[in-house]
Length: 287
Image (tube, rainbow, N blue to C red; front, side, top):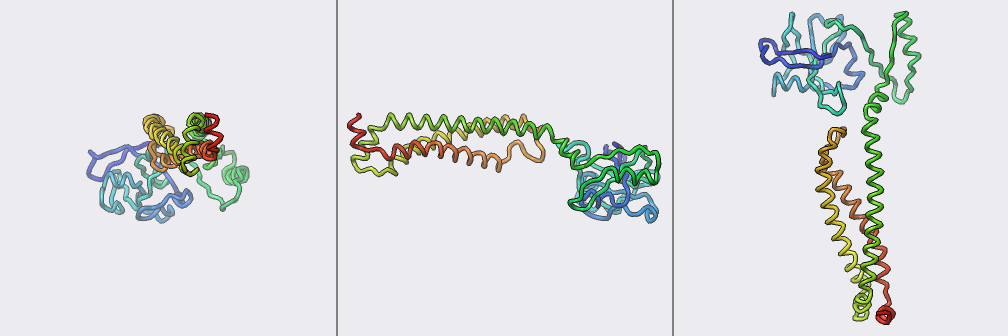
């Protein structure tokens, strides 16, 4: 839930935070790293109101300082005992909001959610979990959510769009390769008499191949640069659909450029290799 938090004695710095009422083992179970301090301990050992705050909240209230031991406004005040890494609680695509974690025995909540972590590789058994809870609390309504499935479900639309884009990109790559293959083939056929003369004058087959591949390579490089320019503009519009990926990712653009130029090289190499094997006599006779 959302709440307000402010450092003790500085009410003008109040900010909206994600409030999570948690129990012992919460951070360990969800594998949330601690930046400093400790997690929330057993309720019997917490004799005062304590809190763990996120890195974002610590940097907001005490930039460049250690937040452990500081206090947050309240009646009584909350003493900060630890700083945890930022966690996205609302959406995987939005930046993590500042967060405040407090013992649920010290902050009333209308409902509880237990976070359970199984042994590595063990299958989740929802029915066993439900029965265990109803053994100690008969009649309690229990809803079980698999975190891994929930995360994957939150990325369904991203994955679908990614598959569609990849499919169309593959089709575009195939069409561009076929197009360049045809263009190089036609260009080589038109220059066949020239190649015959060059071979007759002593040009090596490698020279003919370099002539053809050089022109095709220029087309591939120019086309790739234009494509990158357009992709940068389009990528910014798709930024909201991405997760943990920048719309202008240098590594992704470099990999795409290498793939494009490489595929264009393969498409141009076949007709270039055929033209390099031209028979000078036959070529001049046909001319």
